[in-house]
Structure formats: C-alpha cells, structure tokens
Image (cartoon, rainbow, N blue to C red; front, side):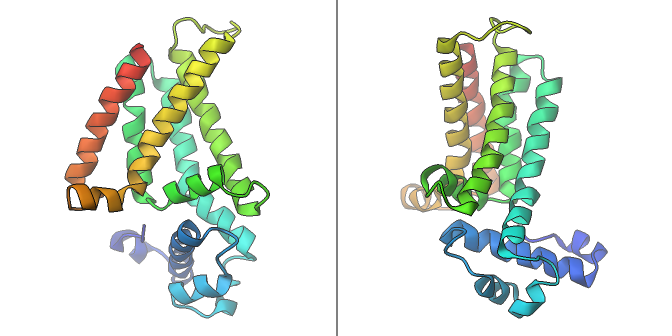
Length: 217
C-alpha cells in the first residue's frame, strides 16, 4: 500500500523513492512471482531507471527480503504480543481481525503466501516466504496450545490434539488470507470491492464467529 501523504512528507526524497520501489515490487512479485519478475520491470513501475534502483537495494534478493520484512514483521510481532497478553476466549478470537487489518495494509501479500505454499519449493522467493510462514505458523500454534486447557506448561501435546490444532490454524490462515484473493469472485457474486470498509467489517464479524466456534469445539 502506498505511503500516506502525511508520512510521505516526513521522508527524504530517497526514502520516498525506496517506498515506491517496494510498492512496485510487492505488486509485481504478487502477480508474477519472484522468478518471473525482473528488476527492470520493478524500476519501470516505480518510475525510475534500473541503475537508480541499486541506490536503495543491492539485488533482487535484497529487495524481495525488504518487501517481506515490511509486511510480515509487523504480523509476527502482533502475533507474539497478542499471544503473551491474551487470556480470554474473546482476545483469541480477535486475532484474525488484527491480522486482517495488517493484511489490509499489504493486500498483495496473500498472493505471495499462496505462491510459497504451492509453488516450486526450490525457488529462492518461495523458500524465503516459507521461512516467514513457518515463523507465523509457529506463533499461531503456540497461541492455540496456550488456549487449550489440556496443554499446560511442560505437558507434552497429544499427537491427535496437535493435528487438530494445526488444522484449526491452517483454516484460520486460509480464511484470513483467502479473503484478499477473492475480489473477482466477490465482484461476480455481489459486486463492489472487498476492500471497502463495510465489507472488511463483515469479514471480521464472520471470522470472529467462525474462530470462536473452532476454539470452543
């Protein structure tokens, strides 16, 4: 998501250019994948010459790492912070809404998630994204284990319970990220924009109900 006007005014010219490059890279990587996107394409979309891109990022790998860090580090921090503070069912069921708000800032990341999960596992881009997903899933598993009454500190987790928790986590992840991949279907079925605030609010209410039912069961 482009930097808002207020924050852009506080940036130097170089910082604004770097953000434009990150925005362009995030969009192109989401559509074409890491291997299918060139630095020349990114530079062109950002409105600069390719050599100028190297003033901000040493390589395509460094740029991809920066794209992921910008979007995913806040998610990892939010999961960790929420996990440490949450103690009631409502606080746990609020987590998907928090993740939805973070994804709303970078809606193209959902497509990058899917590429990493389904694409070529030998691709550098997919390997790097999968590293982040493992971190996010690990935080999520700790959250679910903490909530489950039968998984107290120091107790071994029953394999069947662990499988159930893993499936619940995957379902939560798919419900949250899948929303941002469904614009074309939504437009066909109902018209409008999934990123409209009213539709985001509807999605959060639905997530709250579904996740609450999952945790209770």
